[in-house]
Amino acid sequence: MKVLFCSPAINALGETYTIANFALELMNKGHECYFLAPLLGKRYLLTFGFSEHLILVLKGSIKEDKELLKNNKVIFDAFLDKVSPDFVIVADWHEFKPNGNSNNNSYNIHWFNDKIKLGTFDHFGFAPKGIKLDLFINGYKTDKLIPPTNQFSFIIRPCPHHNNLKKNEDKIFYWAIIKDKFDYSTTHKEGFRKYSDSHNIQIFHPIGLWQERAIDKIFLNSKINKDYYADIFLPIMFNYLTDLNEEISYIVISGKVKQETKTKYRNINITWKPPIGNSEFMQHLFASDILITDNLMSSNIGKAAYGNVIPIVFTNSMTFDKKNNLHCNFELTDNIREKISVLVDHKLLFPYKAFPMGLNEIEEMYDNNPFTSCFIMLELFDEVSSKELFYKLIKEKSLSEEIQSKQKQYVEFNKKLLTAEEILMQL
Image 1 (cartoon, helix red, strand yellow):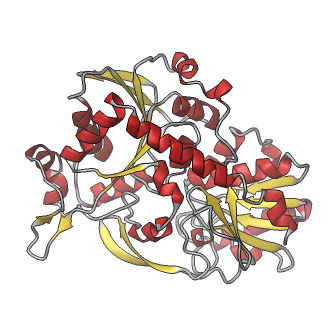
Image 2 (image 1 turned 135 degrees about the vertical axis):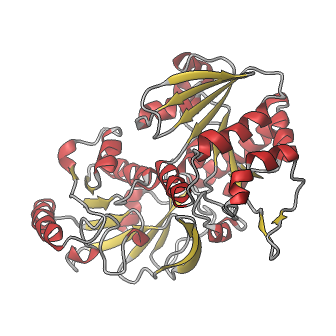
């Protein structure tokens, strides 16, 4: 079989991670795989070992450029004729605009031959019916309609994050991104800590490129001269950790970092690193005890669960009531009030499951889903509960062992799912 994968035209590396693993699984069985990706997606795919000639990069533009699209279609058609795929699988169908253009206006989904079987991954659980989302974009609440998957003949739901106990039905398939716990001969924490030069409690915090860019736009529109992660999120996190009588290594991956630097705040040794390739990323992850994210849909949560790392997902339910007073269901300390004052002043506190978009609708996907037992979800601004949690995870073993046991159970269920080859053979 020949399969062409379409990476998101925006900087969504989590979705690209999914298609890379699906492709690797097929290629290991002797099938041919090709990719259509933006430049950043190409660079990321190369870190998995894919050859450069397998990846087509088309120029994009912020606004639709008919001349650019015309030129791209010539290149696109030539590549498609050369590859002659049996299947085309897109990373997420809602990455396309209503007219069919990719988000970076580099190609159109309707350019594919009708005879080619066209499928999509469904990371959010919105397929096949679609959904109306209440999103927070550029500082404003807005509605976004995710359309039905009418033009796609099959849907693949990756596990994690989907419920791997559900049965395949009506061309909807559940597929395991990762098949088993990572090999302990290569993921032994002490071995990787030599790599990361740390023998302390290690916390890994990769910040999504799309998250940084999105919150930067929000702050720019609101004329806030601060960096959200450096000036708000991380100081809050470090405050939660300073009461512990433990030396802690905290590794931050950020697109704003150009060169690795090391700093120290009380008992916390902080390493700031620029974006890194998949192999180095996984080494840092496996060396860690805890993963930090503020995106419930982050693919890193699943990676952590397969390497005996405890993921903590920080969300927010705090918002303003009709009288513009802060409303929350936990004790809001003076310390947190001071740290979030700029967000309060600019009315930038909003409920979210995936910062800073919101995406509270994805919570439905986690109902009765065993994957929810593989991580901890916590209110970011709940200082009391957060400090208690870090104390339990770092000072006591029972909670970590309980979560790791649930992770193991989820992995066992994943082994029973159809392989990539078996899914396509059924079509």
